[in-house]
Image (cartoon, rainbow, N blue to C red; front, side, top):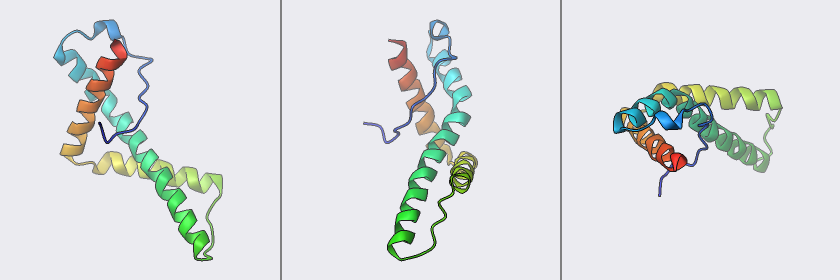
Length: 105
């Protein structure tokens, strides 16, 4: 079971053109930057929600405006994309290849 739980948009992929391992790898490399941001945004959303719950529990001031939440989530996504380790990138690329294979079936 993969540690990644992310929906990847394959709607713009020409699945018929994916025949060799190199084809799958090339497509995964193309998708990787967007998927990194999406994964980071997912982490950012969970982090935001957890922070809000902790603040609420301690009587702290909530920063719950939709625009602040959106900004936090987007920045977390970009930060994750920039700071992901080579190992994380490779694992995610492998996951994308695996998902492409399943999607093609």
